[in-house]
Amino acid sequence: MMINFPFWAIAQPLSMDTASNTIDQSPSNQVDQSAPPNLPLIRPLNGNELRGIWLTNVDSDVLFSAQNLERAIKRLKRLKFNTLYPTVWNGGYTLYPSKVAEASFGVSVDPIPELQERDMLAEAIKFGHEQNFAVIPWFEYGLMTEEGSELMSKHPDWISQRKDGSHVFLHGEKDQHRLAWLNPAHPQVQKLLIDLIVEVVTKYDVDGIQLDDHFGMPTELGYDDYTITLYKKDHFGRLPPEDINAPSWMQWRAKYITSLMRKISKSVRAIKPNCLISLSPNPKDFSYKKYLQDWYNWVYLKYIDELIVQVYRDDIDNFKRELEQPELQEIRLKIPVAVGILTGLRVQNVDMRQIKGQVKIVRELNLDGFSFFFYETLGNRDASFETLLFAPASRPDLRNIASS
Image (cartoon, rainbow, N blue to C red; front, top):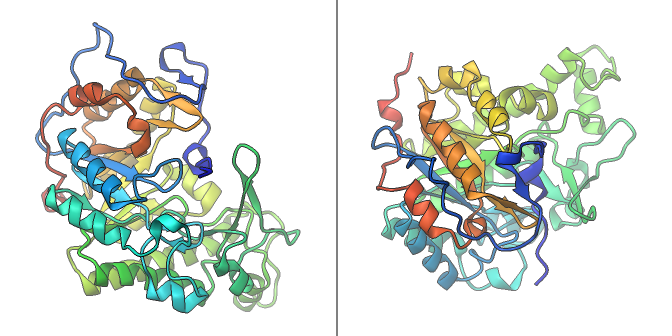
């Protein structure tokens, strides 16, 4: 089966100018490479550490059978991970049987053969809980969809547009991914995403739910008919600014994403008060300037319980500089703050020394752990990961985080 390139993993530019932290471009399997002799064993400072892994349906078959899932989860237990983030929303389809999706656009589960006649999410929860993992379904695509999906075909008016009327974003090695973004200001879009999340929280014994950097909207969008009409109503008939970065225009659009986050948080907590709401965004300024995602304020509004900031950098100094931003140390006094670390892509191998060096910095800065993107790129490196995760660790407990 043809496997697509996960473009979103490199939305942040990867610097290639550091010899000691290079990414090998050869598309081969990840192989075990022991740390050099002068690199000490990297160990957590205390017993609590988030050790997550994203389980994808792209460039990986881990979700495509119960046997694959069970084998992988037992392996991750042996390697001393403690949190699973399996994708459940990708390309405009759910990866579990969904009555909400079927009612909204006529397809109850992604139509690929490997997901038929089974409930992947139920299996992941069963196998994960048997091994004492926290299982947190990942709504990976957020407000994004494939252009040719049944969702977009049935609801073209839900799609946001650029000033020139276009809406497609091309991604991938050969621009094979044609993507569009759902309009967060549209009430039916809001209803769909809330209903999908509520469905998962209600139907399954999940430990939380996760949104990421796709829970936003590119700053160049917002010029569709629905949004223009809404803006004119709020601004005495004036049209939106031509400048996509006009501060007031950015704030006006961002408030709808924040409003949707508030509604999701309120809905989840009404059903299951202890259900964790996790967010894995890009760094703060990039998130707002590029995707109108104001996650810094969401922490203070108590909409999220866990933050895993994606810092996909190969330059160790850039990586450390990003983690030293004052907002991260400030926020971790309120909720656990972990770091998303890239362990590889199909077309990019990441050296084990880089992974160990980045984990070491996370620990030295007293952050709350890390999650690796993604399972398949652990490769044949179990021995190295065993030295990195040398002893079992519990997830950080929100109740032990000081809060003002």
